[in-house]
Structure formats: C-alpha cells, structure tokens
Amino acid sequence: MKKGNLKNWKIDGTEELDLFFAQRMNELLFDYTLDSYKYYALNIYLLLFEARSRLNKIKDDLTNDVNLKDIVDEINLKAKTDIVTKSILGPKYQIYFPLKIENDKSKFRVDLEILSNKLSLNQLIPKLFELIEKELDSGSKIKLNILASQLVTALINVGFHQSYIYHQVNFYFFKGRLPQN
Image 1 (cartoon, helix red, strand yellow):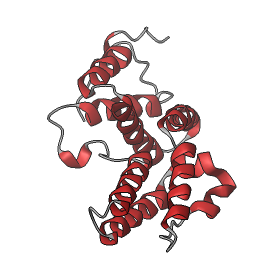
Image 2: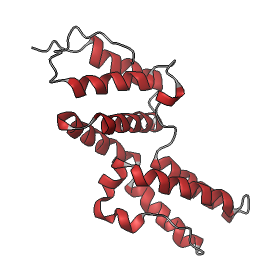
Image 3: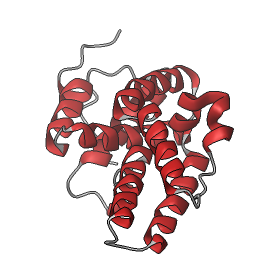
Image 4: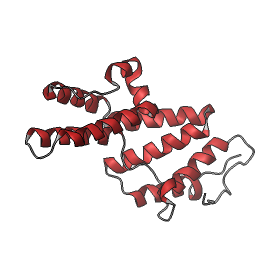
C-alpha cells in the first residue's frame, strides 16, 4: 500500500479500520496499482444490465442463448458472495437467486427487470455507505476491502471519474483531514 500523510491521524490503534479503509481506497484508485489490487470491473447491477441487453439481442436474433447462460452464471456466482445484494434483498434473496433461464424468456426478462430495479445504483450506493460505516465501527478488514472495491465500482458506474475519486479520497483522508486528538 502507498503510505499517505498520516500527520493528522491519531495512531493509537483506535483508528486501525479507518486507516485501512483510507489506504485501501487510495490503492484501489492509484493508476499504477497492480491489476489484482484494482476495483471490480462489474458489479451485480451491470451484470443484470448486460443480461437484459443480451436478452434483447436474442429476441432480435442477433446472438444465441449460450452467451446469456455465461452471464447468468456470472451473476449467480457474484450474488453468492455479494454482501450488498444480500443486505438489500434480505430474506427475499432466496426468491431471486440462483437465477435460472426460463423457457419463457418474457418471464425471465421481467425477473431481470425487477432485480435491476431492486439492485439499482441508487439502491447500491447508499447501502454501501451504510455497510461501510457499520464495518468501520467494529468490522473486519476483509469485508471493508470488498465493500471499498464495490463502492469504487459503483461510483465509477454512476459517472464519477477514477482520478476525481482518487483526488477526493487523498484530500479527505490525508491532506485535508482535521487533526485528531
């Protein structure tokens, strides 16, 4: 991890998770970070969008079902470990997942639309902030790592540029941070 300016941080162990989160966000957004340390390219919402797009192409006879199956498999795989999806859907998670491609594509299209609405970026981003705040209070670095990556992906997908987020993270956590007593 790249070390930021810690002069305004109180380094006594009480802010360990905050500092980890700040450094992880910095690393996720740094241009020269190894790809294995970068944020995810796709989140569940974008995979659902891709599946809906693929369904439309199948409907217009521009592609076959094989591509759709791969996308649905990826959605199911991501949904198994996606903390935010499980948090948003709650007990209804079991109703929606695992997704299965129906013979009746119109029913499957409706299922994708419903999930896309429930897991839209407008739902994901506030839930991400809520979960991150909860993890910062008394959570784990593993979950914070996953949530930080999902947050960056969601912010970029909503239209923020990577370098803008990077500079804001650096300003907030390292340069403009108020001294802690």
